Amino acid sequence: MFHVSTMLPFTPSNKQQLLRKRHIGNDIVTIIFQEPGALPFSPKTIRSHFQHVFIVVRVQNPNTDHAQYHVSVSRSRDVPPFGPPLPETMTFTKGPEFVDFLLTKVINAENAAHKSDKFVALATRTRHEYLKDLALNSVTHSTMESGMGKLTLFSLSSKKREKTVLSFRSDASLRGALIWNVQARDFDPVLPLNGRMILGISDNYVVLIDMISNAVSKIIPNSNIMGWKSQEESLSLYYHVGETVQIICDTADDWKEIMQRLKAVTDGIEVVDVTLSRNGQGHLGFHTQFNGTITDVDPHSYAYKAGLRRGCCLLEV
View 1: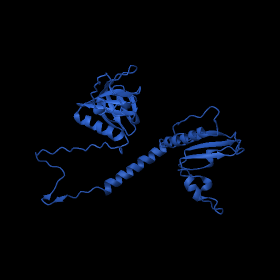
View 2: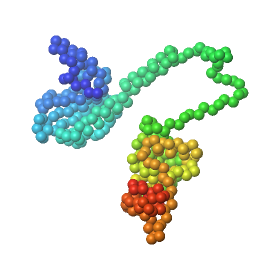
View 3: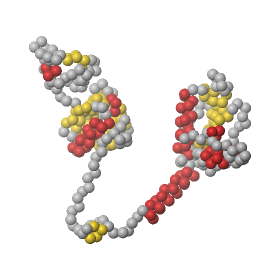
View 4: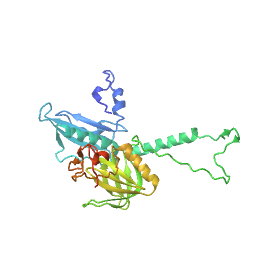
């Protein structure tokens, strides 16, 4: 949200202009726009407990095709540095690159200001008050009653309690990554993969992280997932134009959960094995592109009877 000073309520007879100050004065980051010839801006001009960063933009050659913008930044001492860095000339030409730079600078300034001593203290105090209110007003000491008498929360009897089983959710509404510990390997000739990995599947990416170095070993956009071939507690994941990574799960439950998650967040499908026989002339009865995509299938061939259709893709032979 942006509070534009010239668009806020203005009262000619009110010198304080409180309707404007109460918005501008409570902002953390302020953009100062200056016309050519304007006096240099000093942060001391505006007194506020909240304003921690000022970004001053001075226009040069306004209303022309050669308009440029000179940018300078002033921040409080306890606000850590933030990017993106200003160029040496601190001057930008009019265009989308300047817009992206300014918006990124403003957002990073807001995040950096929240790490300052003042805002850290405010956030700590606010959380303390919320927890205090929760402890004082949302805790009950009354005993729950049931039809058989008093029901206590904790049983001291020797009767074995049933283990609570949490249900697994794999749907795409969970945007963050669900993770599993797996053994992964592939046959990449440049950067071969083989070892214990953390497998993460979000709504956008499939990621493998080396458990020893904590480095990202492989990242695959979900849109590139073609399918997977499942075996007992393991699966082969096919992506891009047929590259493969083999994932070996620790338990059968992990194996089932991974396949459920892949079905929920990718357009890939489970791969099937098809036995293809040649006809009397030695032909298989179908044609493919270089990437394995089937372009044509003879309806009288063994391949057609086996279920091969135009648009299918051969992943392994």
